[in-house]
Image (tube, rainbow, N blue to C red):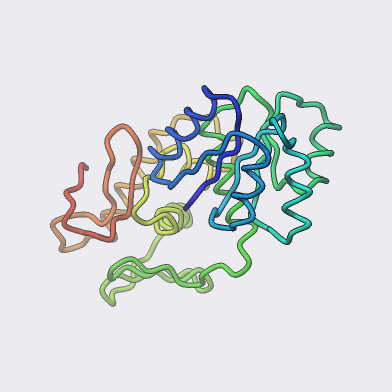
Length: 230
């Protein structure tokens, strides 16, 4: 996934680029509203993270410009102004979500993934990585032609991992995908479910299709020759 960051604050911009890059996303960063409007209208980004207070053109003006131009890329608005009326104004201008500063990057990442899922016009009914298939309509999972019986939690975890195949999915992202944004428990619970999921998917195989990325999370890799840290 490609993310466009439109933010004039150097510290915040650098932190966002670092965070998105470490999460496995492509990230472009521009520093003012005019450059942001031009970049957004190229429609190369899958999502936009937009600061409200920008030089040359405010975030709200930018939103109105790109929406009038037919750009429907999902936008998360960042602002230090967090009143209810400020949020209403931002959403009415065309934002898909709104996060007041200061913010937690993990929450921003989860919200960004949520708006991208929510605004997808036509979700893929079948996800496929190598010989692993997940059918969203029938909730059927198979690997190498063998049906795999999963619990609802295991199915949900595998769905998110396969949607971001080749990218790192953090434990917190997995928790929030399964149990919602209000999840405030330990993320260690994910390890138990992932190990059970591996046991069902990897029968008779030496390496797991679900790779552990130490200190970061998990990834379903198209290249099964990559060693897994279980």
